[in-house]
Amino acid sequence: MSGMDTNTAPRITPIVAVTGAGTGIGRATARAFAAEGAHVLAVGRRAAPLHETAAGHDRITPLAADITADGGPELVVRTALETHGRLDVLVNNAGIVRSGALGTLTPEAIAPQIATNLIAPVLLAQAALPSLEASGGVIVNVSTSVGQRAWPGSSVYAATKTALETLTRSWAVELAPRGIRVVAVAPGAIDTPIGEHQGLTPERMAAVREWQLAHTPLRRIGRPEEVAWAITRLAAPAASFVTGVVLPVDGGAVVA
Image (cartoon, rainbow, N blue to C red; front, side, top):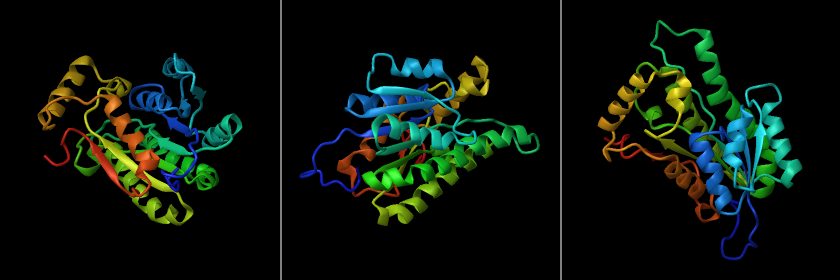
């Protein structure tokens, strides 16, 4: 996609793989791409939420897969190729948070965050390289605005996302000669189930939201569709001269 001349190239149907597509930003992103005419492979661990994502969207194909498992990244790419013949956009959206202050962290809390938030995107991008090079494709990494600030109590999560931003910039330079663009979005406070997935109580989640609102200049929580808009715009052929950027979608939180 990134190498296309938007004025002269024939229009093709983009093939997009989105991880963490069962809820939140991933679901909104899969639906946004599908609404624009793309065929989307919606990837996640649980089949039921993926089928909810795809309901009413015949361009979305659910794939229940663990991207941290041996062969998981290769399965995602292979399925895209077997189903649609190529892959144009890889959206590394899947992510998990395990809160804990230094002194309380255990390997059981640390390892899944590194596996899902950092190792899986590396292996997915690596598995997708031949396909993305063939199509002049795009990798979109989903970071977090917290990666550019301190986040006491969730330092491992913030560290994995900061690392993902470094990968974005490094890959953008490394893969440019191969015609592949690499970009990222850094969401702020977004209305997703990530708090519930952490096991936060409603009271704790309310306190988190209060803190987020106080530190977001636009004074509201963002919607997954607003992040999906940024992802689809960065992946679009019209953004063919944009690479290596990390775009905050955070209501001004990073600059406040």
